[in-house]
Amino acid sequence: MKVSYPLRETADLKEIKESLKPFGGRCAKIVEGTLEYQIKEEQESAAYEALKDKGYID
Image (cartoon, rainbow, N blue to C red):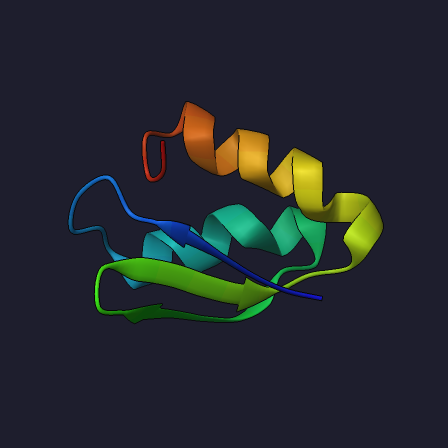
């Protein structure tokens, strides 16, 4: 499933990709201030919380 979230601030895409690896996230990119990536539906909420905890998204 493809998800997108507004980024809190400019972030290093390499760091974000590393954060998503444990959850199986892939194809991460930043488009006009929005983080977009693909992830399996069952991992989506865990990945969201991890990104939120690290301060990348609201």
